[in-house]
Image (tube, rainbow, N blue to C red; front, side):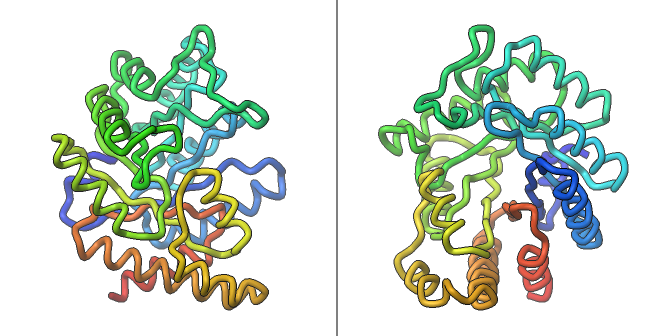
Length: 288
């Protein structure tokens, strides 16, 4: 089922994001994680596209397996990085043949060691160009990225929302945000989008905190911030893994409840290929 159809239903949608593992052991663990989350009946599961397109075939393989073997709706990430149009077309054709209906169209981050994004000579420089290419040739339901705190390369929030509007006009059916820990950024994004005439559903992306060093590394990479109060609490317990996990679960639960109560269409969980924290948060939300 297309995600845009899921969004038309009255109840909020819940989705989980994974990345393709690099080892056989990692693949085994990921499948176990997916099995553990399967009984929660997620609305859909997405699989990322490695840096520089390094996991493109694994991404296709995993979304096909999730959709056709586990019976869970799946979405494949697709980036512009390092790929000519011919290669992108091949990937899309394979996804279609494997009954995948949903694609997240992204520009992608520069490969490791490369300071700035460089388009393939026969590729695309921006996500809107990729989205247009897909819409002209396939009938996928298309998602895109939104940045509550602004894209790291955007000189201003005004520029950021202007480009978001351009992306939406290229054929996007919904948006998923980058992770954030202060809900005010999401609500501000919704207001800016509304003022710009963007009516596309915007699903907030939430990452449960399970490791202090890890979350600080992630936020520094993507330009997100950790609220001072939360950072202080994390540093007080950072040497106690159980305490960090409990704090992360409770914080994300409260964050998700406020988002849903204020009208968010659902929650997209950045799982980091682990199920316990996400499962606990999801069950907390179901109880409330």
